[in-house]
Every structure is written in C-alpha cells, then in structure tokens.
Image (cartoon, rainbow, N blue to C red; front, top):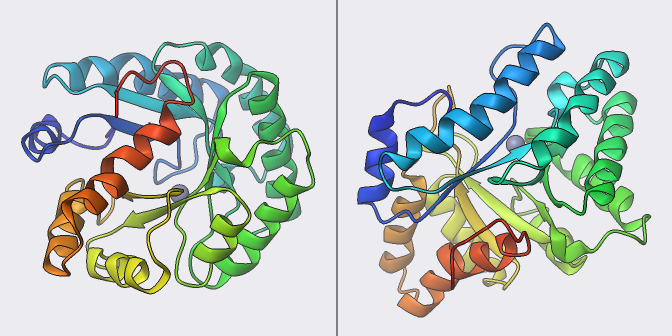
Length: 260
Ligand SMILES: [Zn+2]
C-alpha cells in the first residue's frame, strides 16, 4: 500500500475487505542505508495505519529485510538490529516477508537469522518463495531449513506464492500456504481457482492480492471470489478460503483483532 493512493483503500473497503496486511518487501530499488529501512518501517507502522483508518480499514504489517536486499551480509545485519523495536508496535503481526530470491548462500544466512529473530520474539513468520525457475528449489530449501529447527511451530509459518508444483509440499509439511494473485503474469484468479480445483482447498490455505508499484491489483481477491462462484464453489467454502482461514492464521498473533 505504500506505493498506492488512498483510492485503493476506498475500493478495498467497498469490495468488502475487512483488514489489510502489508509485508515489508522490496521497494523496486535497493535502499542505500539503514536509515532508509528505518523510515520504511515507520511508514508501515505509523503512517499507513492512519491512512487506512480514514476508510475504517484496519492496517497490519510485517517487518523484515527482504531477500532481494539481503545479499550484503554486513548491511543486512545492521538492518536486522533495528527490527526488534518495530516488532513491538501494536499493528505488527510478525517477521516477513523473509525467504529466498536467488537461493544464494547469503540469502540463506539472513533467512536463518530472521527466523531466529522471530523465535526470540515469539512472532508469526511470512515467507516469500522465489519466482519462476528458482521456485521449486527455493521452496524445498526453505521447507528443509524450517523443518531442521524443532523450535519452529509450522502452524505459525505461512509460505507464500505457492504454485501447482509447490502447494502440496508446503501443506503436507504442516505449514500454511499462500496463493498470491496477479492480474496478468504469475498467478491470475482463474489459475488460482484451477489450483484449488486440482488440489482441493485446505484449512491451511489462503489467497492474497499482490499490491505494489508494478502491475498488480489490490482487488484481485474479490475477483478470485467471482471466479470461485462461477466454478460453483459454495458460499461456505469461499468464506472459509478468503476470510476464516486468514483470520485463523493471523489470530495467532494477539495483536490481530478480527473475529471469525
Ligand atoms: Zn513475496
């Protein structure tokens, strides 16, 4: 939402959206200083909740350094140092989106350090998986890293951007899976519903709208609801997928206030 106008908040409310959850991620360019991240985290935790509140829309966020900017270990560790104070903010739900981009050694190191950060502060974890040809390998690597640590409760981890070849792996390992919707490339609403028809809808699955500075659409989720209706999913099933499942996951954070 940091790269969106308030028109989008209004459109979300009018489409029936009850809350927005915005992960810290790549801004389209690499930030040059720790102060750049500090300001970004302030924007996510102070400014956006106020902007959304004008439309009576609760705004929550996730804080981290994203994998795309995690290649410089010294820099990434300096950024990680400033994260704990933001995890205490009343609208922050956890650490995310951490994960992998190119599956590099340095990305893995920073992923592991931010998992540790989440464990130290008893936070939910939101994971980004790489796109295109790196996705299968990256998802497997992430699942392996998480499963090697017995302190991690898979029920408190959501692995996002799953596709046909990764959804089963994530859900069968006990994690939550997110399908991220895009208007053109990657996963469109019809493709997402194809996945749901093929694999069935799990209690550990949700969909989210990609919403950023590029080609994306905050109303992808309402459009996916229309697609689900066209394909004869029941209203109960749709409600579970797009509302109850995310609320059940997010309510594991005591800060998340919506009820089922
Ligand atoms: Zn992502």
